[in-house]
Image (cartoon, rainbow, N blue to C red; front, side, top):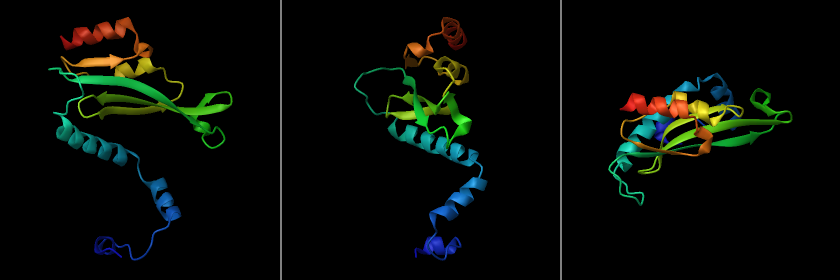
Length: 146
């Protein structure tokens, strides 16, 4: 047994069910906050990485992916009549390929709605597909950042 685990009070092997039960009572926000801390550390490490194009401005890519789930196991994630899903929205910093924004939503949430949650950086270049096309929102972004 490793000395660090012993000093933490773990005297033997820990089963998966014990960990699963402990995680049921644990607040998920601690993991979200810790992920943000790790992302900030990684961004500082890779901020000068070249991604093939020489740009003075920061460049970000925004996209989402739908993750299919079993409706009988995840009834809270109803997506269609016989299908469950969640959607993972990610804003990637292209220097170092580090995510700067991650949001998990219901599968029904349209991509364009995530634009309301982003905190944009003045002077940065944002690359996104047609799912994010809303001229009113994009115009308000340009007005707020200038």
